[in-house]
Every structure is written in structure tokens, then in C-alpha cells.
Image (cartoon, rainbow, N blue to C red):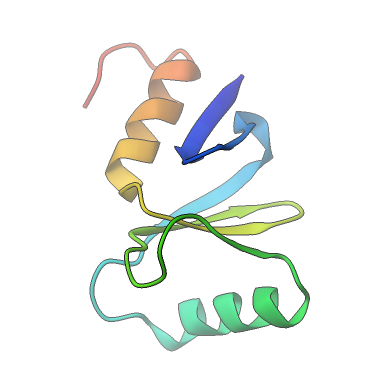
Length: 86
């Protein structure tokens, strides 16, 4: 199954390792993940810079998405057969 991350970006749900809320102050560890992904050319910015709401980590890419982590969780939960929305 797929999960839509914003704009034209859709990924396999089973490739998702983590979805992290990045609205508000970022922990140093989250900044390090973003910096490392950028250096390794694995960072994908979806939408306008500064409007990112979530960080989606997969086994081969790191995405900065304008869709909230809660919305992404709900989409993934519903697709994975989690039943009712939260």
C-alpha cells in the first residue's frame, strides 16, 4: 500500500521507519538526521521550505513533508487495517 506525503510524492507504507513531528523547536538529534540526509543527498523537501510539519524516514530517503505527522499516522493506520480513525 502507498501513503501520500504531499504534492506528487507517494511512497510504499512498508518503507516507512518513522514519522516525526517537526512543528516547533527541533531536538538536536532531529536536526542531525536532516543535516546528514542532506549531506548524503537523501533529503527530499516536499513543498515550500519553512512549511514542513513532519519528517518521514524511510530505508532509503528522508522526506520533509507539509502534512502533519498526525494526518500521516492516520493515513497509514487506516491503510494498514487499523480500523477506525483516531
